[in-house]
Structure formats: structure tokens, C-alpha cells
Picture (cartoon, rainbow, N blue to C red):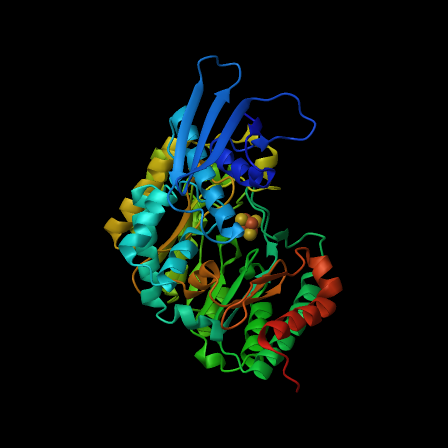
Length: 504
Ligand code: SF4
């Protein structure tokens, strides 16, 4: 069901219609130019009656004679307001009616209703910020956005948790956080679209990259001093930051400590050490010495054949050994990632992974659902990888939730991605008090995150409110090396614009 002919609505709604159809048929295109052939028709009738907008939609699947579905939807007293507001409401009703008809036709329920392109927790926070009562916020999510009740409960739990661990979340715009991207990994995983280059590869030398990164840290540090801005959290991601040597890592820690104001007041320092094959005694001792608050050692799965298939190039044994080594060396908050829906993995294998987790009991556990990202090896070679279907995926997601609750974890952040299996979500769980503040900050977009290094995207949010400005650094090490100076100057100018220019 790829090509859809849509009639009866303004063409400006087509993208939103395509997104809703895409929840059911991921590669759907609406009214593709020059395409005569069509798999399905959607006829909309939008009319106003007694202060209401009434939308009816008829779905007709070609080639299947008796398969016509009809849904009608309406909204009360909504013809008042600016043309933009009316347009927004009409769009909402169109999406709602479309969802109903597609659910009827396919017999599937969408866990996140018509929510596409919006972060669910952000929407909920927005309502909390506007002091909408909790029960009303929940009603809006269930009725207006058609979320399933368990997703609404999950959102509520997460948002309450976030405001408990970060009581000043809505005032965090007075500070900034830093993200530092180290774009190297031992090898590239099959599902990966991060800026991750083989450390032995030919894309830019590690030394030159680090030289540029040191310069960028110094320049951002000067900016922070000039603007008297405190840093909330620092996060090393990538790639795998622990791919570089202990000496190189230490030099970066030192540079940061010397460059940023009030280093001792930084609330959290995280280093992703996702690939166990990058960890050794020397690096773990370094992380401990520098009082790193949180590291990640990511199994993804505890099934050997899966790790091979997805190109992780480390064994299950290696993950366990490095986890226990980190524990022995006194590293405390260890996060582990699991991915639901990896190739050839169903409920049984996922349960097996949870059983291993029960023995390890890391302080944080992030449960991802596999998404087919554009450009990954897996997406380019779909025939090579067999993955579970929507219902089984939903079951695994539910089991993860029930299991974490039984084990004493709480959910504290959530995000969704395009082409995620079963239209589910990724959820960060932690034991109470072990939540990653950076993860909350980056997801909820309540403060500026300055991105340094490869592939790091700065999200500049003016203090006191205003439009978010995204500022991406180059993804490739060589491009970063070639342009770091001019890019840094431009980025600092963009920061000046948001924070006001201060002459030194
Ligand atoms: S370890 Fe992470 S960043 Fe590196 S290749 Fe694998 S998924 Fe990508």
C-alpha cells in the first residue's frame, strides 16, 4: 500500500495525512506527482455545521471489492479564533478521522494515536507548564490525540519523575549543558546511523580531530565565562568516546575542567562506554578518578548470534566481564541498553536478556525499540534481516515495563523515532535517584545544549523563551578538522544572538 490518492482536502494537509497513513503503511506516499497507479483512495468531506467542524473520510482499497471503510469525526465550537488556529484544528480533526478509518480497515490500534512529529513528553510538559490540571491533560491525550491509556499513564509517570529529580526543570534555561561527540568506534554496527567511524579507518586522523576539539572547548569555555553561564551537565557521546586512549580522554577532561566556569558545580558527567571492547582497567580507573557519574556499557542483546549479525564485534562474555570489572573498580551508575526487535529475536530471547539483567542489576536500563533509520546497513539490506511483527513487539515493550517495575526501576525519559517497530518508543528506566539529568534535559528541550565535536548538534534556546535554533557540527572527522575554526566562530555568534552580545 504505497500510493494513495487523496481528495477533498487542502494540499497543505497532505504531509500530515501521509504521516498518519505512514503509521500503518511505512512507505506510503500521498498524491505522488506523475504517478497514475494508486493502491488506495481517501475521500474527505470537510464541512462546518452549527459551530462545529465535521470531517468524514471514506477509505477505498483498490483491488479489494468490498473493502470500503468510512469514519466521521467532529470538533465542537471551533470555528472561532485566527485563521491559523482554525487551520490547526481542522488538521487535527482530519488526522483523527483518518486514524479511525485506518484502524478500522487494518484492525490495528496505534499506541500513540495521531501523535507524529511531536515529542509526547514535551506535549505533556507544555500542558503542565500552562497549569492544565493533570486529569484534563490526560483526557486531552486520550480523546484528542487518541493515545492508548497505558501510554498516557507512562507519560504521566515520566513527567512526574522528571520534575521530581529536576525541580528546576522549567528554569534550567538559565544554565547550559555540553555534549561532546567523539566519532570513533572499533567497527560500525549494522543498525547505526550515528557519526561513528572505524578508529583505524581513513576518515581524518584521531589526533587532528582531538586538536580541533580542544580548540573548540577552549572557545566555548571563554564564551561561558563571558556570559557567566553555569554548566548543568556534560555528556560524552559519539561514536564511543572510550575508543580513544586513556591519555587522550584525560587530556579532554583536563581541558574542560580548566575551560569552563565553576567546573565543581557541574551536576553530572556522563561518558558513554557503549562498546565493551573499548574498555580496560586503565580507562575505567581514569573514569573513576575523574568522578564520572554515569557510564554506559551496552549489551543490546545477550544472544551471541544476534551480536554477530548486527556487527557488534564483541561477545556476550565480554559485556559481562567489563560490567563486573567496572563494578569491581567502584563505578557506580552504569547504564545498559537493550534493543527490542533485533533480527531473529522474539519474546523468548528478549526474556532471556531480561533474565541476565536481573543478575546484573545496572542502575539504569534503557530499552530501545529497533528503528529502521535511513542510511543504516540494516535499512539498505532489509532482506538480510528478519524482525518481529507489531504485536510481538508490543508484547515485549509491555514485558519490559512490567519487569522494570517489579525490579524497582522507574521510567524517566522517553522518545520516539521514525520507522520504529510497532510504532512503539524508547524508554529510559533507572533506580530512583539514578536518573540521567542530561537525558531529561536533551529530551525536554528546556535549556541550551552546546554541541562540540563531530556530529554534535547544538540546540540553542534563548533564556526566557524563544525559538530553538539547531546548529549541527560536521559529521565526518575530516570535514570537522577542515572547518572547526570557522564553524566555532559562527556557532558562538548564534549563541550571542540568543544570549545578547557581551563585549570583552
Ligand atoms: S557502538 Fe554505537 S555509535 Fe558505535 S557503531 Fe555501534 S551503534 Fe554506532
